[in-house]
Length: 225
Image: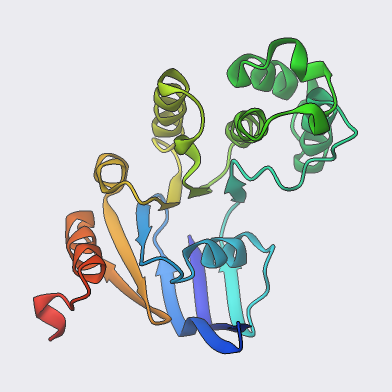
């Protein structure tokens, strides 16, 4: 469970004020997989980073009850001069996970072969994403934060990624940002639309997708007119 209390976040973009959260109060239910939707620039990724703790709100609190992942697949924190294996071991020590077990899992799942023992600075962006996803799945969290991760890799890797994520979500919750409404329908039970700094929560993800579709067409859904 994750609790947002009076959460406010805004910033300046090209001289204009952009509001991501307007004093939001919300509780993400324990064990629920929730899709987070919104138009381009609504602030979905910023919201995930605030929940993860890597971006600070202007005011308000985010109170996690249980363990919360970093944004799944986030590759921006790798140390480029360390090998893939060394990066994995570093994260394992931070989270108190067995280093050898986590390395074995990440090596096999990422399918990097010999590159696993090479510096991450030599990796392509796709290779970094595969390693980042493998690291994320190697640690058991109560809530996973997911931002378009299964978009990386070929069709086989995408299918494998979604399958293991589905397995993790049998015993955990998640907040998933995705532009694929089909993926959200497969994986989420409920949904939130982030619009103009406000949360619109729907107990059925299909209803949230309907709201999102109206935004994409430049119109309000019928129940908001």
